[in-house]
Amino acid sequence: EETEPSGEVVDWSGQDMSNRKFVGADLRNANLKEVNFSGSDLSGADLSGADLSEADLSEADLTGALFVGANLRGANLMSATVKQSEGKTSALPVNFSNANIVGADLSSAVLRDALFCGCNLTKASLVESWFDGADFSNANLSFADLSDARFGQSQFAGASLVGIRGEDPRPVV
Image (cartoon, rainbow, N blue to C red):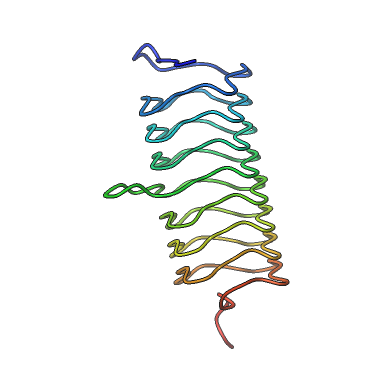
């Protein structure tokens, strides 16, 4: 089922929008708090400034979606795909604090200055992603794949990096 927002600022808070297509949708500044987008296709959607706190984005396709200034605090991105499309920046800066991102595919994403504080990224794929200046304080990155990812000036205070693949991103002291 294809769903097209009206062009006005969307308020779908708490609604079930699972297993739908929102390809290229304009959802800037939308109130998407606690929305169920599980299994939905949001590829190429513009979610800049949107409130996706506590939203369920599990198994969603977020390839090429824009998250500039979006709030994903407490969101569930388990097994979601968040990849950068050619010529697009996936996120600058975005708040993923306390989000469940277990097993998500964030490979090739550009998430500079993003907040991942208290986030669960267990078994997530961060391959070839850019996290320059990101804050991973108290995040769980256990068994995540960090191969060829960039973490320049990122913070890892209290983060768990048990069993990671790739280089340990913490600065050597």
